[in-house]
Image (cartoon, rainbow, N blue to C red; front, side):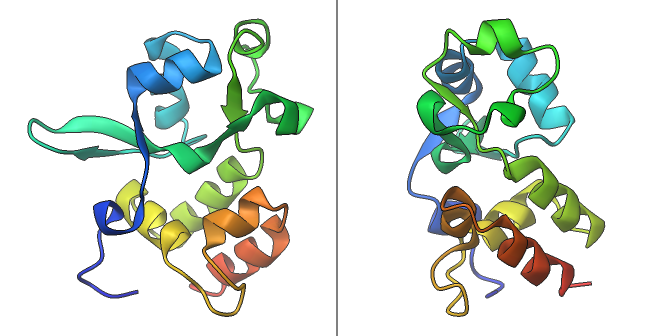
Length: 140
């Protein structure tokens, strides 16, 4: 990963906390809790800095794994059009174990990896979490 790369260089679509809340059908406080619990990751960007989450971390409700509904979010999440990518939390946990901040984790997830091929986030969205996590653990 090049030191010059930042999440802004790699992520093409961002959502603010209110946007994520609307997509998930929850309030902004619950989105902040998801961020704090590292079920999703976000960074402050822009001027003034606004907490933003990559749009690729959300998937259409009909594409989600039912196990991806966080405890206590089930009823409210059902009214949203999107859900959090089911394999994201475990992958963020592995990246946290290697000492990555949210910004570093986002950069890693969106940096193309020729051995996947593609970006780790795309592999997660395609259901290849084991391969992505194996590469993340190799960073230890």
